[in-house]
Amino acid sequence: MRVSTANSSLISSSLVKRKWNPLPIPHGTIPEPKGQDLDFVNVAYSHLMHSDWGKLEGLSSGLTPFRFKHVLLKIKKDYVLSYEFYKWAQLTQPTLHTLETHSMIVHILTRHRKFKSAESILKNILSSASIDLPSKLFEVILYSYRLCDSSPNVFDSLFKIHAHMRKVRNATNTFYQMKDYGFLPTVESCNVFLSSLLSLSRADIVLAFYKKMQRCRILPNIYTLNMVISAYCKFGNLEKALGIFEDMGSMGVLPTVVSYNTLIAGYCSKGLLTSALRLKASMEKSGFQPNNVTFNTLVDGFCKQGKLNEANKLLSEMKGKDVRPDTVTYNTLINGYSQLGNSDLCEELYEEMLRNGVKVDILTYNAVILGLCKEGKNKKAALMVKKLDKQNFVPNSSTYSALINQDFDGAIQVLWEMLGRCMTPDSAVLCELFNGLCHSGKEDLALKLREEVEAKFHD
Image (cartoon, rainbow, N blue to C red; front, side, top):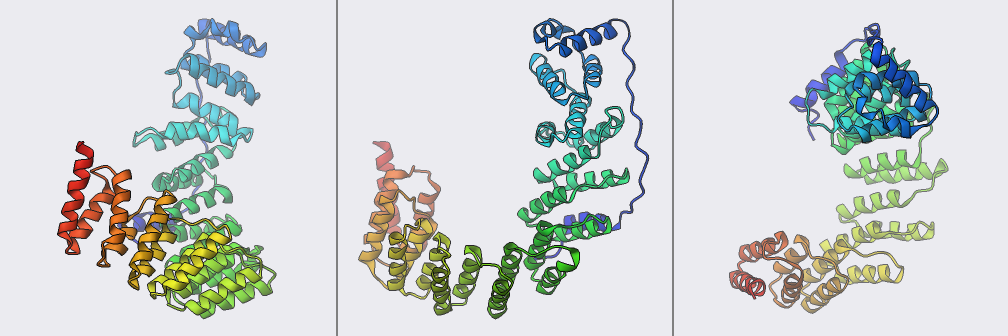
C-alpha cells in the first residue's frame, strides 16, 4: 500500500501545516418586521402559543421566509414547538425553506442537544448535488450563530454529518473552518470521521488527522486509538502500532479486546504468527478472553501459511474455552485443507458444521467442491453441487471455476441444470461460465450451453 497519493498528500499536508488563528464570530442580523410583517408574526406567534394549528393554517398563504424566521426566533427557547412549526411550514409550503431557515432550526435543535433531528436536516440539505453548498451552509450557520443564541454543538454536528456521508474534503474543510473561529469537534465526531476514512481505505488521512487531533489537544479515547492502531497495521508499521498500544496507559486509556485483536491481525498479516500468539497469551494474562475474532484471525494466519495442524489446534482450543466456532472459522479451515487437497478433512469439517448447527454458505460449498475436484472425486463433487442447489445457493465464479478446471462433465452438467433454472441469457455468471469453458478448451460444451439457454428463453 502506498502511503499517499496526490490527493491524500494535499489533504494530509493541509492537516499538518495550517495554524490556528481564531477569528471573531460575526454578528449576523435580519431587519426587524414592520407593518403587515409585524402583524403576521405576532398573530402566528399567538396561535402557536395556544397550539391553534387550525387558525395557523389560515395564515399559511401569507408565510414567507422572512416572516418564518421572525416567528422561529420568538419561539426558539421551545425546541419542540420550533421543530413542529418547521415541519408544518415544510408541509404547507414545500418551497418556503432556504438555507437560512434550515440553519436556524438546526441551531435550535443542537442547542437543546437534539442531534438526531438536526443531523437529519443537515443530511437532507447536503444531499443536493451543488458543489459550493457545503461552504455556503457553513457561512450561513456561522452568521446566524449569535442570532439564534447557538452553541458549539451546531458545528460539531455539521462536521459529523460530513463524516457520516464520507465526504472527506467537506469534513476536512469544515474542521478547519470551525477551528478558524475557535471551535473544535468532539472526540466522538472525530471518531466518526476516522471510521469513515478506514472504510474508504484512507489510512494515510487517518494518521494525519490523528496528529492534528493531538496538536489541537482533542483527547483520544479507546475507539480513536484502536482505529489509529488499525491504520498503522494497514501500512505494515507494526512498531508504531505497538507504540500506540503500549502508550494507552499513559493516556489514561485501557485497552480492550478490540485493541488486542487489531494488533494480532496486524502481526498475522505480516506472517508474524509467533508474535501474534505471544500477544494472545498476553491478552489472556491481562484478563481478556479471546473471542471469535481473535481465533478466526489466528486460524486464517496459520492457514495462509499452510500450517493446518496449528490452525486445527486453535479450533480445539476454541471449543475448550467455550468460544463457539462460527461460519468464518470453519470456512477458513475447509478452504485451507481444500488448497492442500485434503478433501476428507474438508468433508469432515462440513459435516461438523451441520451437526453443530453452524450456518453453511456458498463459500463453504465452494471450498469443499474445490477440495474434491483437486483429488478427482467427481461424483462427490457433483453430489455437493446438488446439495448446494437444494440449499438455494446461487453458484458463483469460484464454484464453476473449480468444476471447469477438472476435466469431467458430471458436475458441470448439474451446475448447468441449476443455471438453466435460475439464470437469464444475459446473466453475468452465465457469461463467465461460458468464457471459462472456452478458455479451458471446452468450446463444444460452451456452444452447447449457449444453444440450450437460448432455446429455453426462446420457447
